Each structure stands twice: as C-alpha cells, then as structure tokens.
Length: 354
Image (cartoon, rainbow, N blue to C red; front, top):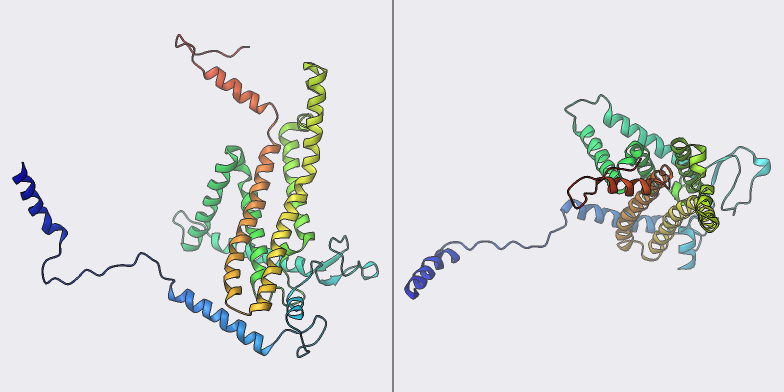
C-alpha cells in the first residue's frame, strides 16, 4: 500500500507544478477596477464644480453675483431652497398666500408643478417611443421596456400576491413618475433656476400624490366589497351576535383601523417629502462646504436613495389596494379550505360542512 501511495503521489505531483522553463501564469487580481469612462465622468463633474465655483462664486440670497459672501453661513444659505416653492404663474394674485407658507391652497402654477409636467411629458414620450410598433420579436428599446415592466410585475406580485396582478400598471406608473420626480432634482438646472425644482421636494406635490393613492385603494375597496362589506371592516356590527363583549371590542378595533386609514396619506406624503428635501439640503450643504469630490459621492448615494423612496411609495400603494379589497372573512375562508383539504386518520378526505 505504501508503494502505491508513493507512486500515486509522484504521478500527481507534476499536475500541480508548472513545467520547467514555462512562462509564469499571470496572477489576476480579485478586485474590480472602476471602468475608465466612469473615472472620466467623475473627473469631469469635479472639474465642472471647481470651474463653476471660481467663475460664479456664491452670493447672498437676494443679492447679485459678486457680492461678498461670508463662509460658511452665506455659502450654505445661498445653496439652499426653502420648502415653499416659487410661483411661476399666479392665477389669483389678489389672494396670494405668504411666501413662507409650506402647504398652500391657492390657484397657481408653482415651479414644482411645472417641473412635474415636464417629467410626465418626458416619461410618457419615452414609454410611447420605446413600445411604438411593438412586435413579437422586440427591438432593443422594446426589449428593455418589457424586461423592466416584467421585473416590476414579478416583484409586485411576489410581495402582494396574485390579487395584485390587475394593479401592476398603477404600481409601475407610480414608481416611474416618482423615480424621475426624485432624480430630476439632481440635474444641474433644476433647483438653480426659479421655475424648475424637484417635485418631490414640495410637500404640496407629495400630499397630492398620496391623496390620489388614498382615493384609488378606497374606491377599489368599495367596488370589490360593496358599501356594506367595505364599511363592515370598520364598523363590524355583526360581531354583536357573538356577545356584547365581542361586539364592543370589534367596534373599538374597527374605529382604530378607520383612524389609521386617514394616517396613510400623511405617512406616504411626509416620508417622501422629508427624504427628498432632506437629501437636497444635505447635498447643498456639502457642496457649499467642500465644492467637489464629496458631492460627487453624495450624488451617487442620492440616486440610490431616491430610487428606494420611489419603490417604497409605489409598494405601499399596491399593498394598501390589496388590503382594501380583502374582507375580514378571507382569513376564515383560508382556514376552512385547509380544513377541507385535510386528511383524517383513515385516509378519507374530510368534506366541508353544509
């Protein structure tokens, strides 16, 4: 046995060694290098930031270019846009609200509304152009759009279940609109010109989108369950048949659920507004203090966070719709179906009671 082992070891040894005189095999590094085009893009952004700072230095709010600006307070203030949006066109100038008002009910076209209309036109035009003349063998643009839509569709159905399938177009539409509403704030002209500003950084816009979402899932709840069935989720009077205590507890829980329904649009709107506006403030402060390098990395982080916020809003809208169309008896029905499919000890399938 020992001779076999020695022979085996001798026979296998050359396989783990390179032949004498052969060129050494180059060792590949496990780390990945950043592509040169990305390095060039980052360098270009840094150069543009530095040149813009030298040619057009910060100046005080309400002042003119060239006015002295103290560092760091003036640098930060001149880089920020406060929550109240700029009014592009006032449709009722006689009753104009205060300039510092955050939430307004005034007929006007603000910078955020105008920017949102531009984003909507671009998104719709892009979707139409990518899917125009669709064929069974798609081209590159159609293939990209279909792959993106199928990915979001599978993602939404995986989260909310098969009942969410009819509402996938709403889910995708919300995601695309909010995504580009968030990303447009990172484009240099937006936020620098008075008539252009990221829509999601205005609480009036986010409240409007949240109210549309609120309206959709309640309309679908009434449409699927009927007026009696849907209101029965919040006023379960039928529980009094199980006793006074059960009825009182059910009514108390139903009232809590009713109050939570009105909290949903508040949380949807404030979460989106707070994250987008907070990101703009952070980006403005860091840019004012460091000019370049760090803002480039922060822009990359903002791209990811803005996409996450768009996904959160659209996913919550989809989940709220699915919850609205489900009655309180669905869970009991699932339990009954499992009981029907159960097998007793003798191997006979149990039959449902009629």
